[in-house]
Each structure stands twice: as C-alpha cells, then as structure tokens.
Amino acid sequence: MKRNYLIITILSAILLIGCSTENNETDVQEILPTDRLNRNNSETDLIAGQFTDSGNIIISETDGNLDVTYETEGDWIILETHLYVGSQEGMPATRRGNPKIGRFPYRTDHVDGVTTFTYSDLYELAINECTWVAAHAVVYNTVTHQEETAWANGDDIPGNSWAMYFEVCNFGGPS
Image 1 (cartoon, one colour):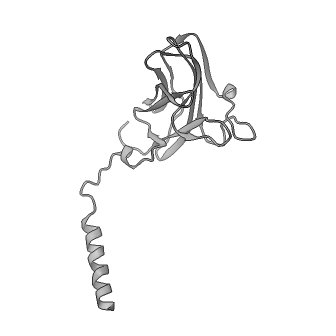
Image 2: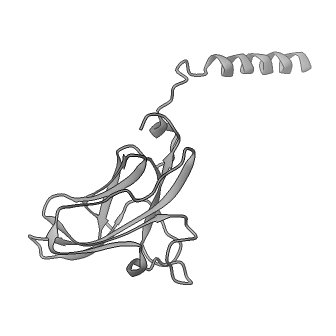
Image 3: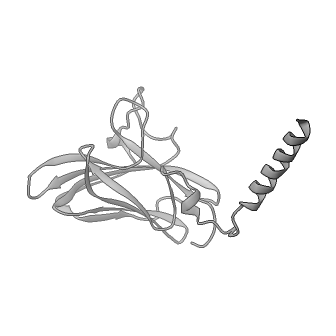
C-alpha cells in the first residue's frame, strides 16, 4: 500500500512539473487581480448611478508619472471631477470610511460640461509599488437630463456608500 502511495505521489509530481507553462514571459495584466491595473494605458468603466456605464477612466504614463483621464461615451458629459491618488490611509474620509470627495487633492468644475478631462503628472509610481486611485465625477446625460454621481469601477471603499477605488501597480517592464 505504501509503495502504491509513493508511486502515485511521484507520478503526480512529474505531472505537475510537466504541466508548467513553457512561456515564462507572462503579461502583467494576466497576473493582476481585476481590482488592479497596470500603469501602462489601462482603463476601467466610469459607473454612473451605481449601474450605468457612462464612460471610462484611463490610466497612462508620461515621463514616469501617472495620468488619469476621464472620458464619457454616448450622451454623457462631465460636470465635476474629483480624484485621489495615494495610500488608502491618506484618502480624505469620514470616521466611517466614506470618502470626502470635496477634500480630494484634484478637483475641477466643468461648468459647460466636457467629454474628456485629464489630470497629468500626478504620481511617480516606483517599480513594485501599487497605489490607490479613487476617481469620482458628476455626470449629466444630455438626452434624459439625468445627473448622476459616478465612480471608476473597482472595489468598494470601506464605509456605507457605493464609492469605489482600484489600484494601479508598476511591476516594471517597458513603460
């Protein structure tokens, strides 16, 4: 019986070793959880009113610094943007953990409405570093005249609101 167990164990080890991938160059996006984006031209949905895709938040890099672009689609325009990039502990929040968007370091009123807006040169992300991004907007639908709060799609921010964040990581490689 012990001999059969030993044979099965050896065969299982050989099978596991033999099934390893031949290509050791794995795309960073493939190994990242869905709540993390690579720093190089990644995007996530801009969700209005908890359920409506009103556009995208696009992460890119210029000279080693992160750029965050808000971009609407369809009949949506942006009236306000609020952005936090940094550690979870550094995000302005209430005692219950809800974000204080009015205290986010990057905020702009877009009185006439815009369809795209970029915050540039925000944060230099070191290799093997990740940072929080909480991107909020007030969006307006020009056809239905519906005004909504919107968040970049990601994980829930602790608290009792539907606010979300995602992480951007720099795992090295070409920029």
